[in-house]
Image 1 (cartoon, rainbow, N blue to C red):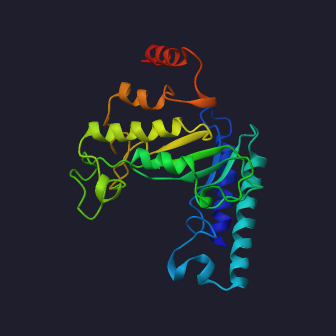
Image 2: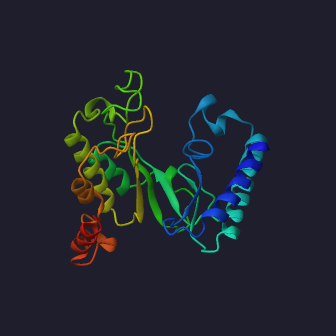
Image 3: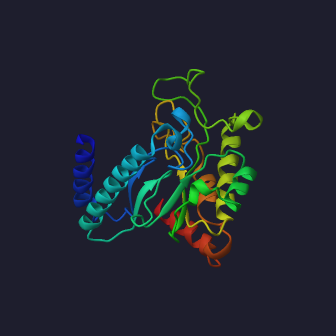
Length: 257
């Protein structure tokens, strides 16, 4: 009860303070909230949510979760004078009548495998969706350990990013890491049913060294290289930029340097 009260109050305060900030395009209220992959598709402790609890307890837990998420989302909507879209929870569980955006998290490291997943999305990613814009709300997580706040590289028990299985593994160089990020992003650009994405992550966080920047915000990759991955030039289908759009973006960036 205390957690719910604190979260609800903090969101109300945050929206009231930040609602006029021009960089905010949407509100992401929760992240990976509830059993991983949703109620029906969870396979955690005790055999998963659908096995671990009695029907009566499952019903109570689901209702408690839904009521709380809807309550906080309503507060965010009421407070935001700009009426931005609300993403109720990034990944795992969405409340269909409560969220404006629908996102899933997918950390395949092989671009070809990511393409296969995007072409035929698992039910756990879209179960309950009602035409909300579909986002790859987390992807990449490409680990490249170039040191960090503790001065050295991670202990062996702390991987810097997602390993990609025994056959794919972690990248060994900046060039290899960048190629993987570019390849994964290209596959998202070519899936025209995907309306947006969020790359994990902007900068390293302690032992989680899968950022585009280091923990101290020093660059891992050149700006032109990152621009080539994320400026939309690889976009296909209905979201593809109009002719000359990439050049206009490039000119705008150069003017601001």
